[in-house]
Length: 300
Image: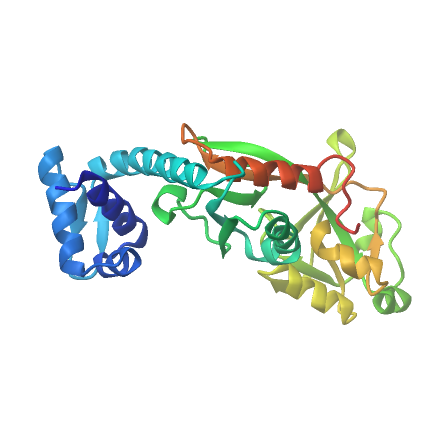
């Protein structure tokens, strides 16, 4: 048995959840893919995958084996890339997952600049608001906004996102500009459902914090939809500053209650704990830290 080929096939099947998809990716038949994984299981003396007619899933032993062998294969791939390179620069494939709104609005322009600066690095980026497993998805890192929920992840701080309340000049001319949180009573609210408690709007910090229970006119599970409604003059919305920034810059939106802090959340790159971090990922993390670090404004 070719152990290396078998391990690579197992990782690909586990990540894609399909023998046929893994076989197509690695250039062989589904039958050959199944034989390779079966041979690996026989050699290890354990069952790694549960096979059904509809899906393939990991056994407990497979869940333990996958991240460890995937990390070893990643290191081997990076070593191959380095040996093939004459200039010693990081190269190879970098796979990322990122939230849809932040990813398209802020990460994508940054990745475009990164790709121009490092043409030897290939990027494969999945924009989704679903929280996916790095190991099963075959991702090197996840870009996330907010505190990590998984303690098994290593967080690399990239920047900070601030929550802002905004409205259109059209709306404020018609309904008045609130100067204090209490003055929000009677206003129309547009709520972003991605917040933990979307209808509770908190202004200020510590003992001075005031929470307003919003009587919501419109509720969306997407910050860009909230922005669109606010620009149309339908009310006040509360969204991340990285989404509001271009519209504040062009004057289609105006920040309200800017003297009352509304909370911040870190922007981070998450990698699996104990997993080897490829040099190309370290390079991207430093690039994003330089771009989004202290003093950065999303409107810049």
